[in-house]
Image (tube, rainbow, N blue to C red; front, side):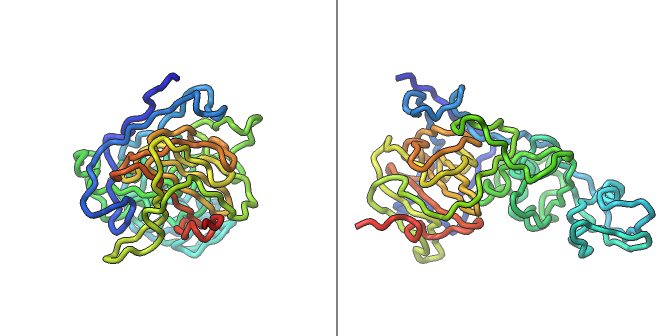
Amino acid sequence: MRKILALILVFAISACIPPGRDYSWPQNEPAPVRAPMLETDEAALGGLVPQSAPAPWQARSVVPAAETVADVSYVVQPGDTLRGIANKTGAGSHVIARDNGLVEPYIIQPGQRLTITGGRYHSVSSGETGIAIARAYGAPWRDVVALNGLEEPFVLRVGQKLLLPATIPDDPINMSLEQRAAAFRLDIDDIVTGGQPALAASATGSAATPEPSDWRKAVMPDRPVSPASGFAGRFNWPVDGKLLSGFGSKGGGVVNDGLNIAVAEGTPIRAAADGVVAYSGDEIDVFGGLILINHGEGWVTAYGHANRLNVTRGQKVKAGDMIGLAGDSGYVQEPQLHFEIRKNRKPVDPRSYLPKRT
């Protein structure tokens, strides 16, 4: 069997453990900080591997080059459009619309006075993702989402101006890697909302991924991915094993957003339902090898601590397909699977949506 070492840490800046979360078990002492060792095994993929072995999730590098915009009051001129005003002032059109109570189709009238919210704005370039933009400025991506009122499907447009939080450092270009790492946090919700590459400004429609001729093929890494609609929220267990930690509060402010299930190292991890792989990589240190599957209708499942990833971003999978092999990557001390189900970005108790076990 030919084994290929496929993944090492993708970025020089590591994500940190989000506070107040019980992602590992047991937690009597801090788990060692280590890089997940991930492999892919083409012979074990059962036909699910694309032409080349799965590559780690990557986002195009972003150079901090935000422009500062002053708070101004703008009077609409004949022939003005919302996008044109945004280009003139340097502010984001979505921010202008929100702050002035404008709704689609964003009709404005000559003589109308608009408030232009000042601050630092980043202009989105081709291939950039929200996560990469946030990392470049050492800003929490979730704050950028809230500040700009971003909504599903969270696909950025080339040329879109994103308002950055006022609390980020004044000079991110000269920040050290350690300073950026300290300022940047990443969790599953960030990947769900900020992992899509920017879509060309001229593109139309909802940025859904075209249906490939073979559902087992992955889309190009610079294309947004979108699952089919109509999913009813019925899931299967991804592994069989002893429950180590259940969903919910563990006391002392500690919360587990999913289930931790003990399994032998190398146990196949099965897709809990049909869907599209939204992420396959090791960007979040606490989870090690992590796979996210978007099932549509707001449903997402997460599979953490894998020692092997057998799928790549954009790949379609069916319920029961082997998507990876379980292990002890990330911040755990024994082989296990961390499994989550999320509905509309919020974690829910997986046992409420899985077949009952005796």
